[in-house]
Length: 63
Image (tube, rainbow, N blue to C red; front, side, top):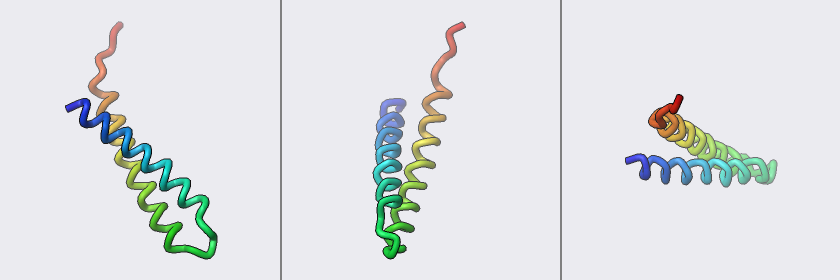
């Protein structure tokens, strides 16, 4: 299960960076493209953070 979560984490962060770049580099007159890319980047961020926290919670601490 951790491998599936790790794959989803990588895909989510990739989507965050790709759509975040598209949102920031979109033409200022094209509001629809900026908003759509922004929402997709936000969804990638939320999914990436959720999966990262889930993976980091499962790592045992060696003291």
